[in-house]
Length: 420
Length: 90
Image 1 (tube, rainbow over the protein chains, first blue to last red):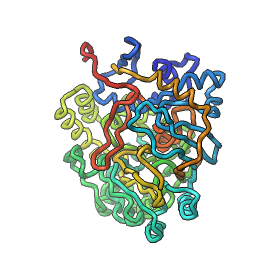
Image 2 (cartoon, rainbow over the protein chains, first blue to last red):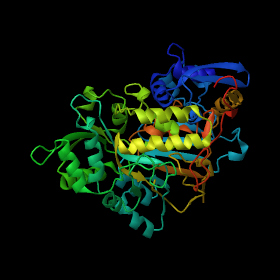
Image 3 (cartoon, one colour):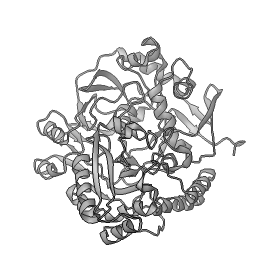
Image 4 (cartoon, rainbow over the protein chains, first blue to last red):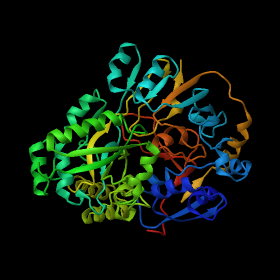
């Protein structure tokens, strides 16, 4: 256990793994120190009080020191072994760019949760229509994110389409920190939130998303009562832009970095093309795109506001979870500015900071809920993001796939699935 | 404080690597990623990496409870059986 924590948090440990450390430090920014108490107990101290710490600890995965030893203490070679964990599956084969094969771990410690299938094959197929073709031809049994216009024909052919509401946002992150950013002005950030025709975008996606008018869903008990109720109101959007100095003669123009595919990105190309046309027609805003690979875009989110990697982009389209207050702190606390943390926007709001401190230090559910509502109201009224849609996590599956549960989470429990 | 039952399970998983996979029921999934997420136990490619190359193979002290559709996913014990805030540290 200590060995794995050193792998992430102790730069001079033999098992230090730099890329994994960078991700883990950003996901668990409060890690202070840790020590063995006895053979069965470890004590972890955070750098500040954090009632939500378990929601951060959930992202620290543990791997076998034995794999690392076997690979000659070289993480690049561990991947080829492959690495061992304690989970319900084990990796049996890795073919870069092509496939990963998993087999059930028959000796899984949690006997109640042993996997039902013998094997799982994972294939990277970034293009939505290629995934659709792979499913229809029987090359795969399950695809993530089918193309929206292919859903009716999949249903007609007897495939199952699963969707489910889950805590997720498909936004644009405003680059507030850049020297020449138009988004330093809160009116501009609010204005764009009134310019987006979310219902039309949802229709384009064949109903596989719902409108996002805040970080949390509008129906969430912690949504709060913000002053701004974002809806499609181009007149209001244009008026706010004009107040901030952007008019037809001097239009707001900026670049957005987007990915062509990727985790939770839904269908980024047609969706961003919609956004470009929508913002132009509704509010006279000129948007251009810099299209990069998903991994490149994720790295850009850790860049400082004027870093060359951003190529002048004033917004990033990065889908993100909105599952708990730990995630909220990670993305929006002033302590987590880029390049070390997830606050890419370099957004700081004093009322939000106060509410975050209150909920972090409390163990009383009501106090935590009240402070979460206050914090969320600030995320709406002083928006660090352009809120666009919440994904409904669409998947398409062959009818042979049984037992799948679409949880209210990014993650899935593959142990529940069987094949018939 | 996190109480563990990790080390035994890790050793066991390592010992099992030698066994060949039997071809029986196989679930084949197409991900949206352009490449295989890294396989050393903390995958890249964002949370899709964690979804498929993280939690199914590697675990944390706490884990997500993903067995229901009707409520927000919460946490359940993972490699730690229990956790609590230390009484002397508030």
